[in-house]
Amino acid sequence: MRRQNGIGSFFLYFVLIILAVVFFYPLAFLLFNSLIGTYDLPVLLPTKFIIYNYYLVFTMIPFFMYLRNSLIMVCISVFTAVIFNLHYGYAFARLNAPLKNFWFGLVLSMMMIPWVATVIPTFIFFKSINLTDTYWIWVIFGICGSPLYTFLFRQYFLSLPKELEEAGKIDGCGTFGLIWRIFSPLAKPVVVVVAFTEFMNSWSNDYLTPYIYLSQPHYNLAITLFTTSFAVPNDPTMHVMEPVVLAAALLLLLPVLIFFFIAQRTLVEGIVTTGIKGYCGSSPK
Image (cartoon, rainbow, N blue to C red):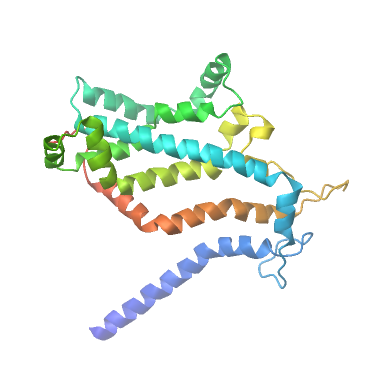
C-alpha cells in the first residue's frame, strides 16, 4: 500500500512539475527576450542579457505621463467599484424594500447585455454633457455600479448572521454604522477580489473605453504601449524592435503580478466565499 501511494505521489508531482513549466515558460520567454539585443529577433533561449530595451521604453514615449494617467484611472475605478458596490450589495442583502428581489433580478439581467451594444448610446450621452476626454466618465461608471460586483457583495453579506446587525443596533449603529464598522471589515476577502478584478480591467484589460472617450494625451499606459510601433527611427522599412515591445509588455504586467502575489491568499478566500456562501433570492433570517 505504501509503495502504491509512493508511486502515485511521484506521478502526481511529475505531472504538476510539467504543467508548472508549461505555464511558466511564456512569462520566462517574455522576460528573457526583453533582455536580448535591441535589434535581435526573439529566441527560445537567449545567450546574452542587456537592459537597454527598458531604457528605450522609458525614452521613446512620455512613459511617466501615461503612467500618471493610468494611476488616475485605476484609483478612480478601484475606489468607486469597492465603495458603491459594497453599499449596493448590502442594500440587496440586508435591507427590506418592496420588490427587492425583482430589482436584483433586473440588475443581474444587465449582465446578459453585451457591453458593445451600449457603446454608441453611452458615447452620445457623455458627448451631450461634455464629459468626453475627461476622467469623470470613470467616476460615473463607478457610481452606477457593476452587476457582478454587487452580486459578489450581496452573496457574502447574505452569509453573515443577523445577530451581528442586532448587536450593532443595540450599540447605537445606524445603517451606515453597520456597514462601515461591522460588515465592511468582515468583507475584506470580497473587497480584495473586487479591487483586484477592477485593477486588472482598468490597468491592462480595457483598451476600448480609453480609446473611445479620450484623446491621446489622456491615454493610459496600456493603450499607449500597444499602439506605439517601437520602430527604428528614420528606418524606411519600419523595423519593429521586438525586444522593446516585450519589455513594455513586461512592465505592464509587473503591477498585476505584484498585486496577485501580495493578495493571493485573500483572493482565494474571497473567491471561495462568494461562490459557496449565500444563495440567490434569499434574505437574512
